[in-house]
Image 1 (cartoon, protein in one colour):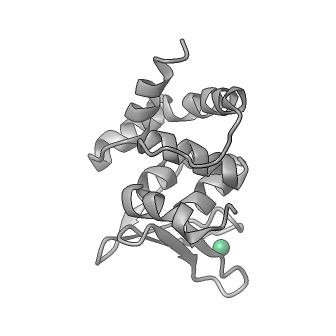
Image 2 (cartoon, helix red, strand yellow):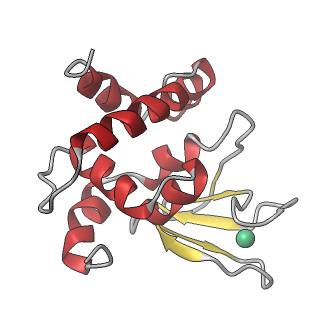
Length: 150
Ligand SMILES: [Zn+2]
């Protein structure tokens, strides 16, 4: 069910892998390459030189290190970075991007995770990174959503 391509489509087409990557940690360094691609240290292995390539057009990533070779999409990346289950990430991204998740999902579970995530996205460091990248952010949308739960 959750690997369904149709379920992923709205996220792939409307999400932004760069904002997910920027929430990695306060020391995250992202370098712009050509063709809307970016490089950073790989969050899946101990990477001393940036081997991890983000493709912002496709919202996918791949690690060029031969020992790692991880690849995936922004939902996979969010799951890895925040140590949140894949389906939970999918639900959060559906809500953040204003799509209706088509399956049953426990709202209490959602609230707990969004509160945990908000700490990350509300950090000063993250705001600074986002300001610098001048992008529409998950942060604003998460803040907007949290109005419902305060
Ligand atoms: Zn890697």
